[in-house]
Image 1 (cartoon, rainbow, N blue to C red):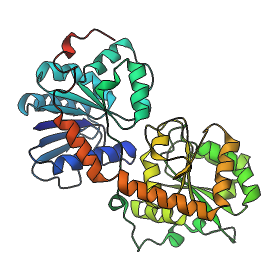
Image 2 (image 1 turned 90 degrees about the vertical axis):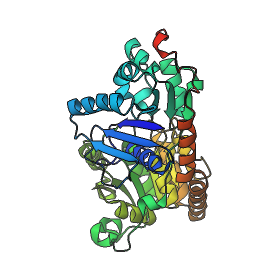
Image 3 (image 1 turned 180 degrees about the vertical axis):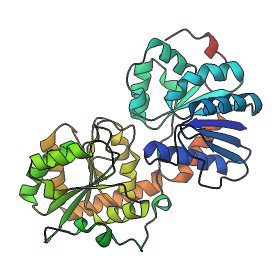
Image 4 (image 1 turned 180 degrees about the horizontal axis):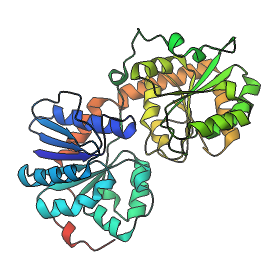
Length: 383
């Protein structure tokens, strides 16, 4: 089988979608009888050796060279399947149908990019995909409703996480690198809350967590909140902390290495991200893999990554008192935190391994022609 994959980014940025794309590439390298070409619009060239069966090319955000190479691959490589890793590329679906009509289009979707109702034209472009691969049942449901696409056209391929992706490094000295994790204003830090996210999306819940801090600090005054990540919302979060007079308890750490983050997970007590826009939320798996219980939102795909009452707590992400209560409940019960952390760790190991992801992806890829849409997409009416 020959597969052509197009994606926005896999290696030059950090995020759940990028980690998902990396795992797809890794799975392609591990498949027998598969030749693959990968074109990445935003990436530089792949930093890893992918072997002789997978070729990776980055285009540094240059759209014209990307498009020309894509056309060339359709004409010369003649793929059996085109793996479209973002709905942004739906504009290229007609080109695939025209230049390589025998290729099956697999569209991969993640979260908010497909939750809202599109224009009739864009809906028609998306409908040219033979099958849709979704990272969560929640995203499947939202997109099926918004795009009027039958659920039977969807496959589930959830994010996974392995500790080998995020191995710790004993040489990393957190106390030297981030002293605020241990002492602030000559006082010892007793409890640590952690959020890991790009500070670019307002739905992640950092603002609501800061709003909950005054209530938390009344019960546990030595609690500190650490936010890993950078982005344009950082200044607004600092301003909010100052307005609430909790600025000494809120620490924006910026970007950190994977090795530093692995150590931070181990040093913190509760992972807090009451989001309301997660397609799935691989970061919850990262926390669970480090035995850290999570507080997540209960209105999006987070509920598929965090089992309420088992591996963490799911709360209304707009209810600040509920967020505060959830944090307090976990801080006051170390044994419950420990049990949740252990259950989360076992769940990641048993249900979210790379081997399981690989088997499911291979099964989806080999179901060529299984969609009722295959062979009929050119004559479909606009939904």
